[in-house]
View 1: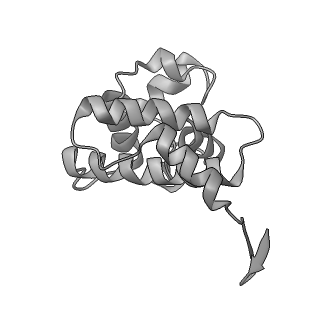
View 2: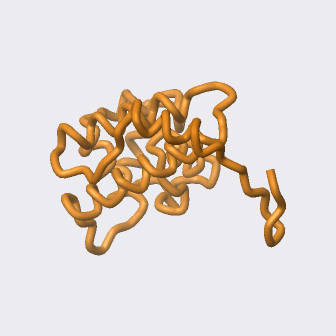
Length: 139
């Protein structure tokens, strides 16, 4: 690791990163099927214990490709935290019950999804990690 402008920058081994790129073959996403595949790979990498710098770089690349595709295919227009949550749930075919344990009980989730309760910072962080997006989308 090197320190650059107050932040730590991971040094990536080009050979290891190249072998990951060959294995996963990330590319610009053009279909929902490709998007689902990229999401599955990103989730696999995100939940991997002791990720290497190369795996973290690949995860960041996959997230960028997924976000680009979803921004183009599912434009949000004027959005708020509740509509963003509903959009992400719909895009991944999730039900409110799928979020139990992520942000609270089924009652709390129902109130949040229906806009009757604000999303707390802790819940926004948990949602950001779960959906692999910036938690600021939910605040």
